[in-house]
Image 1 (spheres, rainbow, N blue to C red):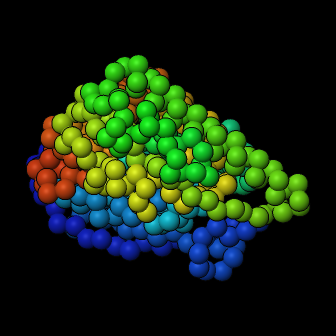
Image 2 (cartoon, rainbow, N blue to C red):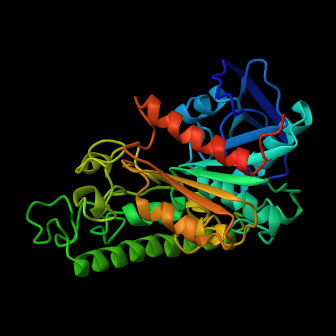
Length: 393
């Protein structure tokens, strides 16, 4: 924002982009086969032009009305929120197509509105998406999804952004899911039969908070093992379909128990100012098997691309380690979704020194009912953009 600290009124303009693609099957509901529709909003100050655009996205979308988008526009910035084709439903989501969609939306906005400088605003799960896009724009290597399907990102014409702002971002969807998985489930076909010594929500479990380091290590190893068992099953299932000549067939499945991270019950783990005993979706014991838990409904290809600990290309830290542009990392100290170690891991992964870190004390994940704190976060973004010379009129 300009040095006068003026508050701007802003407008929200609906945004739609349509393009065609070649694909063996359609993985989103509605619309003609072969066409992809992405929609979002352009949030821009009244009577303030700019050549710089801050772009937010998220694999599953739906964040156009996040407090941070309005707060940035109020401080004089042009902000776009681009939903991927998987808006509201990540059942069949592949991260490679999300990268393709985000890039297509950015190109369209630049062409239609004359933006020259683009800053990726990676909020929450949009952090790893932004890093994945930037990594592949700078160092194109991914020719297919982990399942071997398109798109080929090396020929997608990806355009690198000029900077990245990570705000309340977690490392990646795959790492986050793995760290939250219920390690007590040893057989996916029998999710109600659980190892009592790993069941965090079993009052008879001899392991109770505060958890020992030995238990935390054992639990995480069991979480990773569970993720890898699902990945192995997915690969076998996909190979079986292809062996039968069913190259474009898919298979849906349910993953139970995906909100059982020890840190929800033990506030000394990855400690911050979050409220103990809850997660950002409410009671973690309820969410653990509820309909809104991560990865509850999956397909084979989607699992490999967004949830597999070993197979995903959207690794967050791995992507961050290969980017060259300036980065700002903002951590919210009362975040009950993205714990402090995630912000630190992302910051530490950036290989150059043109990076800054800031913590908004007391801020929750969504800045819900925290207008002063979201304004503080937006102000830090403004100051960083000014220092870097990105706020071009």
